[in-house]
Image (cartoon, rainbow, N blue to C red; front, top):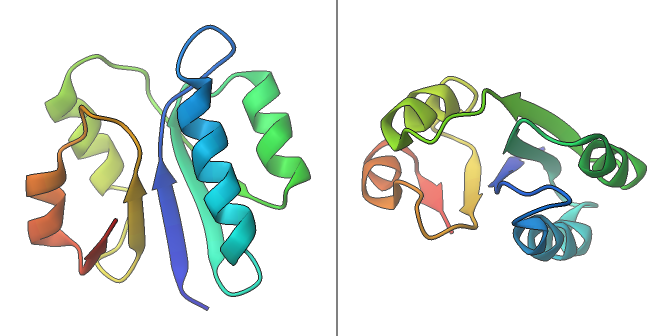
Length: 103
């Protein structure tokens, strides 16, 4: 089964909308794909929300340095994964060169 990795950050203070939007998309395709969420320092509430929905979490180290975040993220994806980015700051141009499918 193909894997879809959603990359979004969010917790109870900021950005939870990114996670919720991705969760809505994930719920639509969960029967046809393996779903994983890559999130920096996920809160307990986010972990619980995703696990209840049968979604694996890939915790990423917290950083505000986008280059370090990119390096961290690239260690957890393969070129065959489908990646969904939800955030204006993500590194689309670089990832597009590496991965086959990017949304």
